[in-house]
Amino acid sequence: MTCAPVGCPFLGSARLRDRGALGAAALALAAFAQQRVRRLGVLIQYAESDPEGQIRLAGFREELHKLGWTVGDNLRIEYRWAVSNEERARSSASELLELAPDVILANSTLPLRAVEQATHTVPVVFTTIIDPVGQGFVASLAHPGGNVTGFSYLDVSVGGKRMDLLKEIAPRTTHIACMFNLACMFNPERGPYGARISLSAQEAAKKQLDVQFAAAPVLEPSQVEPVVTALARDPNGGLIVSPDAFTVTHRDQIVALAARYRLPAIYAERNFATGGGLVSYGANYVDHFRQAASYVDRILRGAKPADLPVQQPSKFYLVINLKTTKALGLDIPPTLLALADEVIE
Image (tube, rainbow, N blue to C red; front, side, top):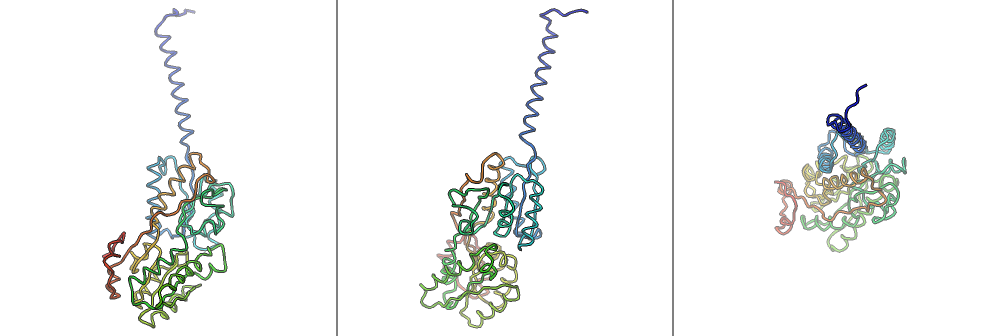
């Protein structure tokens, strides 16, 4: 057998090439391990055909992509749509948990309640939740504890602000009702905040000497029209619509009835105003979903929900529909129009 000289450059180069190849393979393997496909579950109250749900999730995915997560590459998302009742929420949460997700995004109270009851280990990020401490989802805003954190929707006291805005837009209004889902009063799992928002509006009404206020709880879609017609019997009626799964699901019906009976109404979500409603005042929900993506990213990179404080909206968005304003014969004060974040012509 012939041995190559110790100083043979060809043998040394071969050994270096082998070592380089092994090193590159090891780095590639490590990179692959770090970039394994992660699984994200999404529970959302909107139907898949609802444009609003698609808009919010598009913003969520765009933000995730900016943070380095690409669907179909290093991220897989499993959706469960139209989670707007207890049975659907429980079954959808169970289905997602069987897929062993790394984190779950829960939109609104019913989906969050279902997944929070089903697991205490899988990280959960929520969006658009009113009073997460009062509902028992987190120990405190600063220190959530457990496996749940996210982005709070708004404080119940904003009901009073909506009362004031409605009175400013329709100054002749003398009796106002706040519509909310009656099931919320008797079933804490649906979010017992509708009545509290109504009470906030009632407190604001007391400061208006010429305003009579009434709560208008509804349980079924068939009960919406009687509330609207009762208010519309007097030309000086007005309506506040509380944000909950019921009113969001039936928003087209509520907006259409308010228009038919020429009833000034104020809503919590932009999609009511873009759908023909007079005015909306609330948080920017697409921003909520974008912010939620930042928490999902941090959790996928090792952060614990218990260490991520619950965030509250820093700004509320005012949307005015001028077409509806004109149809109702109302004149928006120029100062209020200047404050609007969006004006729909």
